[in-house]
Image 1 (cartoon, each protein chain N blue to C red):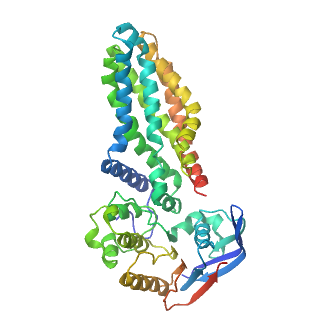
Image 2 (image 1 turned 90 degrees about the vertical axis):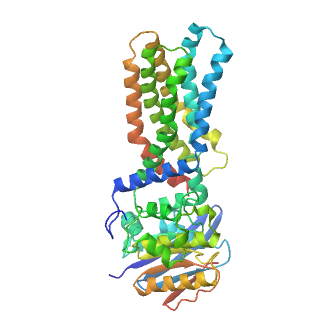
Length: 232
Length: 204
């Protein structure tokens, strides 16, 4: 199959196989992916109904509402990241494999972003239009959400790995992740509102990008270590 | 090439209980180590400690005379662990599960179809694992041992859920492996009728 007989298959082969496995699993159970997406869409459509039709008010509240909804939707999806692997014993098999756990954890996290972060980003323009955000702001919102959800997936994977051994770890997971997610929320929402007001917003995007790069380089190692600890 | 797995003065504590203290063994190529003992006596914990999922209180394992700790990746490349649970995704088919597994460790020349054929579950390869019976799932899990190029097999109650024919098949697979110079550590309640050099450890 993959790799020559007798040799440990390469890291990229392993990363690709992990991605493929996770995406296939989501395809078999699309509900896991759709739930957070529905949550995001619901919160964002209920807000305008509750706040009344004043365009000014809507555009003012939009960045905050969109970002809070995105953050909560990501949290909602994180809980299940390692839960099923823990339940069916395949996590132990991953831990007992000679492949570096970092690569397997990264593969799972990338798959998580592709199935929960990316759909939010793609859905956001429609919701932004419902909030009457200016057309020029929509791509800023999309880039900010892309960078932000990448960070949230990565940070969240650490929390999910730490709480995987606990029954009802959801509350604890949120408590662990929220403080780390605050910069993402603040920079994300602020960037979008600055852009909507016609001010310079690039600093915010840079900060989000820096945060995402930092998370990408540190979080997989923390996730791998956390998985080992919680499997003791 | 001959391989050895040895344990030196192992002590393992789980919670408040000391499962074993000062345990030693030395296993060479072509030998089977049977772990015996009642439920909860620490058979699974010992297997988990070998594969590195549990931290030992004291003592160490050596693989080919070197501490496992210092050569974790080589050791894991040479071992494959069959846990009490099958450890595969119930939503994926047998071939999907195994083709993912095949990227996790070095492979031998036995491909997935061959392994499933030998275990008598080839015709089920396109069904999701959840729709298979427990015994059939176990057979798919055993295919992992056949495709991996591992010299050390760690097996936790591998005969569970298997029918008589499956047990005979597995006994044959294990003795083939050992006769080819492999090592096997096997935890079991019932006696295993394998005609190979066997050591026994009775855990209290």
